[in-house]
Every structure is written in C-alpha cells, then in structure tokens.
Length: 332
Image 1: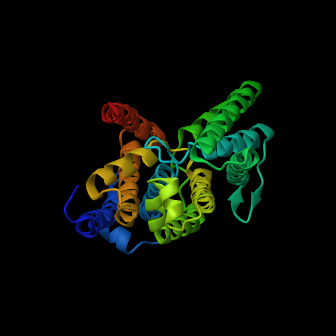
Image 2: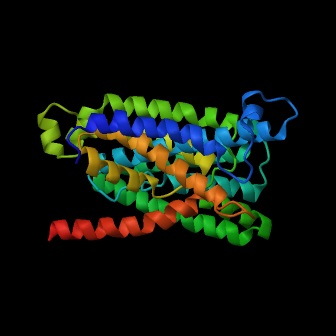
Image 3: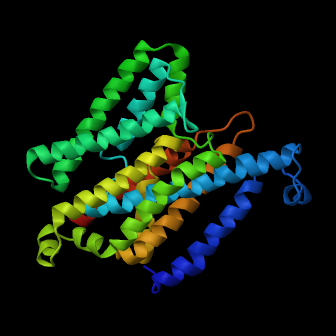
C-alpha cells in the first residue's frame, strides 16, 4: 500500500484518466488530421467518425468502467466476500433475459429515443433486483449469505430460460443474443453516453456519502450495529442503489465481466481498504482499465472488432484464480 493514497489518486490516477480520454479516440485504423478534427465540417467523414463514434465510445467505456468497478467495491463490502462482483446477484442475468425476450418476440419499438432492447434489458435487471430483494425479505433474514445464494439461484434460473429461448429461436436471433451477451461498446453514441451518465453519477454520490457505513459493513454486523448503524436498512439502500447503477450500464453495454472484481482488488492493494480512498481510486482505475481494454478490442483485428467482454474475460480468468489461491493461502 502506498504511503499517501490521496497523492496516488489525485496525482497519478486522475491525470492518467484525463490522458486516456484525450489519447484513446485517436487510436484506430484511420488517423484523422488534427486540423480536420479541430475545424470539422458537416460533410467530413473523418471528423464525423472522431466526434460521433470514437469520442462517445471512449466516454462510454470510461463511465461504464467506473460504474462496474464501483459496483464491485460496494458488493465486496456489504457481502464481505472478496469474490463478489456486480453481477453476482442476478442483475446481468435479468438484463440478459430481458434482451433475449425482446429479440425472440421481435420488439423493434423505440420510446423517447431508447430502443426496445435497451428497455427490455433495464426491465429485466430491475425485475431481478426485485426478485432477489423479495427472496431476502421472505426468508426474514436480509443477510449477506441469503442474498448471495438467492442471487446465484436466480442467475442460474435466468440462464436456463435464455438457453431455452435461444434453442427455440432462429439463427439470426441466436447470433444477436450471443453477441449482446459477450458485452461490447459498439452501440456507443452521444445518446447512450447520456443514458448511462445519470446512473453512474447517482451511484457514485450515494456510495461516496456512505463511505463510513461501508467501512463498518465490511467488518462485522455486530460492530456496525454497536456503532449505531441500522445494518439491514443500510445494506438494502446500498444494494438497490448500486444494482440500479449496474442495471443502467448493462442496458447499454451488455454484461462486461471481471472489471468489478479486478479493479477493486488492485486498488485495495494500492490505497488500502478505507472506502474514503478506495471509492475514488476504483472509479478512476476502473474507467481507465475498461477504456484501454476497449481500445485494444477495436484495434486488435483489422477485419472485425472483438467484443470488449472477451478481452476482460481473458484478463479476468487468471486474476480470479489468483484471488482464489491468495484467499486459500490466507486462510491456511
């Protein structure tokens, strides 16, 4: 852990995030001239690609990475499980089922500029949140283990329904579903950036204001209660706030895995477990990480883009195994 976490955040991560936002849009198959970008015309293709495709995509990757990383920080704290991710409690499964139903039923409507697939994904994610919360309430014990087990069961159930609908659908529908399940940012536009932004801002504000409560929840329920914290109420508030944020991200980007487990743990090793420092560090690191992964995904192949979810999974698989072995060594 660094001696001064705030220096690491404000003098390394913050400038690095700004450099990432400035540099990444320039990387790609075509390299537009600087004067064309600074003085774009309405019929200039290079300027259009830069301002309407690349810049929104980099911004979307940055915001989505921030939200996924923050979701991992909060879930690992409130469930006291280092392997918890933003998708552990079925949010991604619910969104995926919503998209699968929309594609299977051929819903091509658009409401207020938002596609039917995105609306179905958001509805499915919110439905999954409601089901997990309902299961926890029905058992009369809103404990970390109850919510985790309920979320895992719901995820498996949703996955089975998705497989059934894929089997019943035709080839084109199955391809659309599989491509969405991989998680990618190819749908990035100015509109999608503004769709995702309110979810990220609200989630960051709520968790930032509750960083002391997260510190207590990450230690022990009895200790938190002895300090005057209403444990169940605070856990539900954080669960709902972060789950809705993740739902907004998955609606636009699909389920991009492993960002929410890699970024928080790397930042925890550097700045420590105090959420006052961990939250801003994870926000910036997660945004930078996903932006770099997406840049690699869209430039690694000339013939076609690779979904960014594949890149994060390739990196996240070995990292997940390292965490398992690290935890096993610490227990022994």
